[in-house]
Length: 364
Image 1: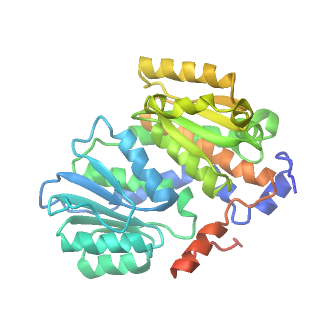
Image 2: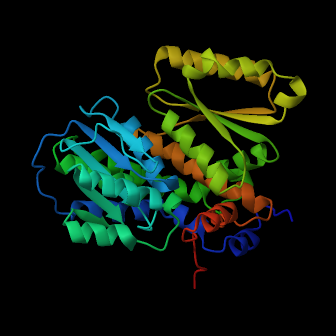
Image 3: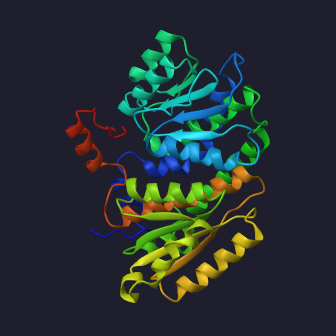
């Protein structure tokens, strides 16, 4: 069943838990996340921090950590490591700051890492909405921020990215994010009616983008060290929301290997849609590489689109792209008559692993 993206009633009926509404209200979510983080009381760390290990899986935690790594690339003085598996690195010890992040509180990989971090005597901070992890934090007396539940983790960046950033500021590890955050929230408020479901195709860049991508295999390119995190996020959202196989990479690294694949059979390459992300902080050489990449691919691929970030601060620019691309990943399945929320394959896998299934209820 195909759905016209101007048929608002049909789109809202398909969108069973209002993912479009949650995305539309990013300004509200980020404001609430900021207030939640500011009210969080945390004592100064007892020991120095040599590195920060952030344990998390899924579209919310992983995306937040990658965005933090980009956002703080040239500011934070200690490395940030994203840890997604069942074990933590051998270097984790009493001078490691470990963030335990799981929305459900029952992610088995994170529970495993949490137990190991406790055994190593690491300094631990917990973000969760409940579950086993909450019980463990209460038992061990670890600082814990309770984040709101009842939403898809991949749509709660405001309750993960912002609290972690504010906590790092409270610990004296990064600067005050207040000014860029306020710009970011203001940008969401400005763009929401342009990208939202009520905006018709002819005035809506997100709907136009989705129509252009329809039927093609998405490939997303960002640049190091900033928009690679945006490209990675878009690729994963295309999987979870759009139910599409997608691929990503980063400039300049991809020009040393993946680019050779552009010499593939022309009929094959015509099946791909390439998204190239530009940012005001791209180096002159990276900017030139994006231009050359677009020139080469336009002669070979099915379609090429350049996305330029918007805003003054780095935070606003990163999230301006996230905001547009999140809407795109919702319109892509809806136009095919598919609800973006269910993750049936993940639930099949969890059932086979004997884990609790992901459940999102219909809204009243």
